[in-house]
Amino acid sequence: MLPTHMRAVQFTGSRSVRLAELAVPAPEAGEALVQITMSAVCGSDLPFYRASVEALGPRASVVPGHEPVGVVRSAAPGGIPEGTRVLVYHHSGEGRCEHCLSGEPMFCTHRQTLGNHRHGADAEWLVAPDASLVPLPDDIDDAMAALIACNFGTAFAGLRKSGARWGDRLIVTGLGSVGLCVVVAAVAAGCRVIAVDPIGPRREFALALGAEWAIDPVAQDPVPTIRQAAGGRGAEVAMECSGNALAQRQVVQAVRPHGTVVLVGSNSSMEIDPGVDLIRKEILVTGSWIFKRYEMADIFRAARRLPQLRRLIGVPVPADEVEHAFAAADSGDSLGKVLIDWT
Ligand SMILES: [Zn+2]
Ligand SMILES: [Zn+2]
Image (cartoon, rainbow, N blue to C red):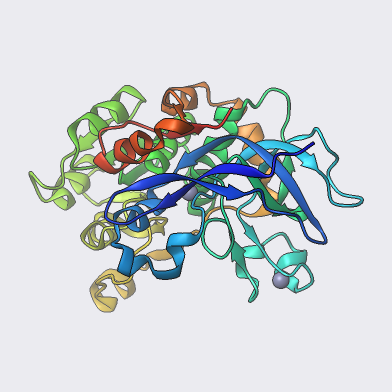
């Protein structure tokens, strides 16, 4: 017998959360019911955590979270069977357009995202489309799966898109969980990593993970320092993970001619001088949004080969203390990933 009610997180405005008691949702056609074991706090949750009730509007009633790991307890007909341990890919589409069929449902015009358009991961139970379920290999545990479900997958896809090669000087701006995943993967891929973040312990951690340079962008203009570190002309690659408009501007300035900038951190404004920055340097500036559904097997393979990723996973916070999980992520003091344990 499935329970009728569940604990679920709700944002109550201005950095407060509560554990509400909600009805366990019922799957519709093509959907499964997943019992959540682990979810995680993402940097992209924090603007909503910090927002006032008025600014949240109808979103205040939506369960947040888009990094769910759990076990299928009620399967869709013909779908992933009951008892299967899964992570849930957080974008879904209507399933028939070219983007859905090619494993890129984030581009579907009917896109729905967990924790935004539908109830998300920070609850004991989650209804998700069967098409979004990703069965987990036995050697990927729940905590690693939660890291992979958004942050490591995002780092992997952005780094792949960057075309970074052995020996490249690679800037990482923003050393939250995604940025630190980039550091781990880029170091393992033979890149020489230049880590940039205003928070000292994050820079120290990046150095411990193998970055060669760590720069405080508040204490000094990072652009000349990066250019100097990278042989005077600038870095080959930048992975911008902060979403800070000034950092976005600085990485564009700090890459060399023919360099590549991958924007991973989201922002709504960015200053570029097309003549100086783009035309006369012939750089490539591109965006990378999460990862594609079809990259999943490659992401699991990469995670297995990166033992340092384990260092990014914090001690899971029990769901009853969920306010501590969000406060830790919000403070910036937590190094790596903040997980919520629903078991
Ligand atoms: Zn996320
Ligand atoms: Zn579609």
